[in-house]
Length: 250
Image 1: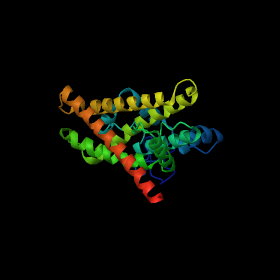
Image 2 (image 1 turned 90 degrees about the vertical axis):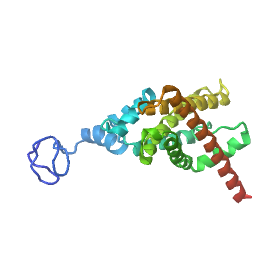
Image 3 (image 1 turned 30 degrees about the vertical axis):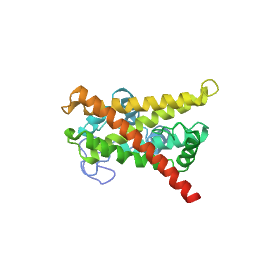
């Protein structure tokens, strides 16, 4: 450890420079440093925060993200980086698989032709529906959980993390479906993802807003109604986008 910052030359008396924030433990580049630190942390940025956030999204999602928004942020992976990374993984998995459980997250229809059309659009615009979905989620949670006194940005962030959890469910089951598609019908996997996404949404909202003075019954009802409304609206938007696209093509 040097006595002066190698970046701004200020005197250092702790592990970080008080002026620019650079770590005092600045090493020379080496192959070990390149492969162990820079390749993983610098390019993929997969530090412990990434794995911590993934674990929390599947064990105590609402409680953990509420704590994050309230200020406990050191352990969590950045929400923007997380959703970009998960969308990228989902896009990759979707491209190598004939099964598109990822692209049809939050989408329900018994019309196979409609599902096929949606699949084509969502594959062409993989980020479109996720981007559209998040502000809608934020608007309705803002509307139904006013007592929490969260501002709209906080609702955006809590719903970004929720969407990350839902996308991870779809990715996991897409991979499972690739392995077992010859044994179990694809509709079986669609149903599982649909049910799990629905339950996950209710569980997430119930946990997140559990400390804001709602009774358990009121909180459960609000969580269920919010989730149902969001499912219906997003399904309607999907059908609208398909209709508009067909209108232009015809």
